[in-house]
Length: 239
Image (cartoon, rainbow, N blue to C red; front, side, top):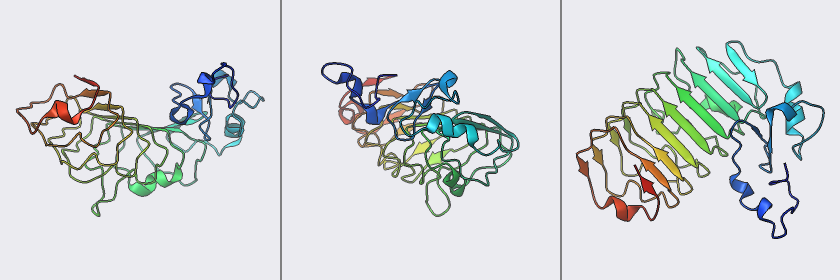
């Protein structure tokens, strides 16, 4: 709990470096992005987030119908209907829905850090007006889209998600990714587009990914890679 708490505990301040990219897997990430809080320390009557997020969650509105809620996390099953804003939810899972979410659906979750969209027959990442479903998620750092029916990514659907670090689009039946589809993802470090139907990697597709470290394109029927893929990636591991 001394890492990213605003206080130098290491002599050279290493414990406070990189806190703007703080990741909290399995824990609550304070909305001011200063530190992580373990599940057992949430709602224990002691403030661990400097802004008190870990104790505010205890007084949030009831969990919506058809939803499984935990402190800082919300999981929707079968139906995705949200009437109230959930500013303290930083992890959201949407699974097995009977209908697709719209861009306005995520307006109720302005502080999302992590989003999982799985098995909902999602067909597009943008609306008919070429507006991204994730346009309002300014703090999103991890996005997982799994088992859907997207087929193609034709627009710059991620250009507003400049803080995104990890993007997974697996088993989505993706056949085509336009050359400018990954614009805006200059901070992305991990990209997984494995287990799709991609046959061609367009030239300069990965050029905007200046910080990419790991790229997984396995389990695709690739037969054409335009340009020089390794020249586009300044560093990292291609799987």
